[in-house]
Image 1 (tube, one colour):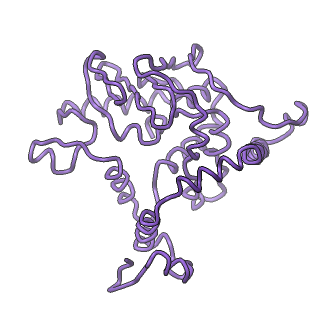
Image 2 (cartoon, rainbow, N blue to C red):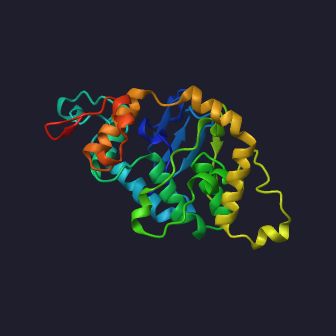
Image 3 (cartoon, rainbow, N blue to C red):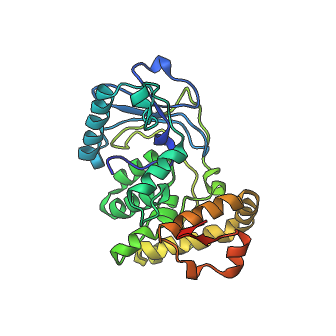
Length: 288
């Protein structure tokens, strides 16, 4: 990955040359010698943010992405970053929905269930222990999350290559809603060295144990304790959110059918009660 992975923010971005064209609630790529990203969406109640593609921790990768974006726009001038696959031929250049881009990614590797959570967790798990505190701050801000969430929800310890795809999904909205909201006309200006960050986020003390004992613990042990502490403190809110915002049955069925046909999920592992609940069938060599 050539930049810090966002959630779905980068799926919906407009090209502009001038900041005067910025509208509230939209995400932008400002084309310049060094490309800038502006995320004004507050879907997850995180502050709007603006930064250039020259982060010191991953500068060589940011430069590649910068050059690719400039080349792409010069070769295929358009208003939005992603357009429908037939739009260039008919010159309509219509934007696509984030679900379409998600399916494009899934189709790249049919045997793996790739998604936003996969990329974010893989990125953090690879870079986190290689980073100093200053670099971790840059990661925290650009991924629009918190240090606690990086360690609790994204950081994984892999033993085999196969386990790389066994990552946790996105943090739940009741976690994300704890972040402060900003204003679209005053986004956070991200300094690449993270020395002059203007963001302040509330975070709990990791665990109520003596400092000497905490220093003896491994990162994995601290991460496990932090998760237990958070769940114990927020169990009721979390369960309330799950019950209120649980996935719709048709969405669950669609995912299961897709994973069955791609052999990610085995038919034998699906309980009979689940098959009946979602009316899952196998006809003419295809799961329905």
